[in-house]
Image 1 (cartoon, rainbow, N blue to C red):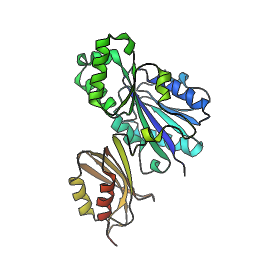
Image 2 (cartoon, one colour):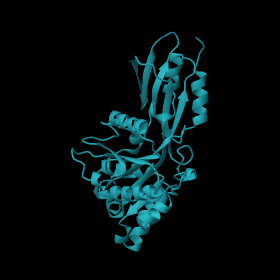
Image 3 (tube, rainbow, N blue to C red):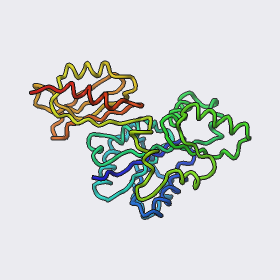
Image 4 (spheres, rainbow, N blue to C red):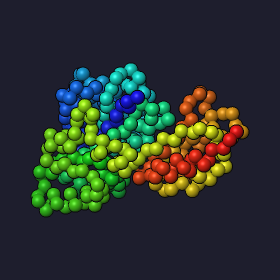
Length: 303
């Protein structure tokens, strides 16, 4: 079954995300692609939703952020979109303060991985703001750096307002944060040409989450129950680049299904009454998917 692609659009407040989204949608529609947009706003009113063409499906998530308070709502909206529409791609425009890792987390669950695949993280940067970033709070500076670190295609806005030396300084700093990032600093149309839109959509060599994105996901199907003690030992020794693990698993000697949530060395279990696929979604930075598969398979025991 062909999966619907997800493109995550991040960037700090006022850095040009909506302008870039609008241009992307125009290009997609010109290529007869079926597109939907999920637009997230922290406030109660959406200011930019009127920028989305009428022939594009639009879902608005207001008064919160999909990377934290609205994770569950995002999953519901994504499932609703793919179940009720034949879509090639869903664009998610995040709030200006969204954490990229947490947005990826919100887009990947045991339910959504069957029908959705993340194909790219695009980011926008205001060159003038970047130049004066040291005047911002440490929290905001970290956010700006984090958005660049986990993007694979970056549009630098307002670069023309800087001197030659300032431009070189901005580009050098950004490249030092993410050496593999593709940077466009001229105009939106040139930027879009790097997306390689076509009937097969974005260039898979650039945007396959399993090859180029620093944040990778691995979905593991459980065939037999785990030994719970060994499972917890595995989590205690999990590598630091494994940020999240979540899904539904069973344990030997227990007839129940459990919703497992692992993050930052902490794990929680919640009894699940519904019959759901037994699978785990792992999210991390350049995680070794083959090694995770081997390790998780070793935890399975015969009943």
